Image: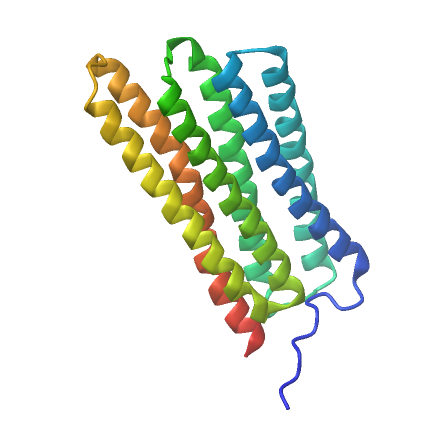
Length: 221
């Protein structure tokens, strides 16, 4: 009979709690990113957008504190030497993902005045953002599974790939329609770049999932 893979940190509840909080904050950041961007698209630059940005910035700062604390604890307490590098890489990549969310939202807020979106494109952009956020949420779920139930990582990785693929399809449709329109070339290029920035976030999530797949296999073996 096969044995279940034990939780990675065993009785180290403090460290486990820190990582749980870290994952919570990244997931929360993706929700604020989505809400803020949808408000920006629908209403323009408002106080609600600034509020969401400040919330994401606060989450980013807290995640950085947690990440540094986990690094310090892992090394000072000499914990999980066989998987320490994987854990640190995962946290670093997830923190990088949150930073990209923050930076992208900031840039969209700065450039909103130069952006004109048709009603049809707005629906597609909202769908794109939705798939991107779903890919991030699934990445967080897969990350939790890595620590608690590594065999379950595979199922969540499949979801990430599906959401990333769907985001790519929506992005392609948007860019095709934009470059078939009468929009001035400069605006076309700007719209294309904005779409690519959003779609690239789901690609980052998929890249993290590729690493997670390897980390999970190493834990199971």
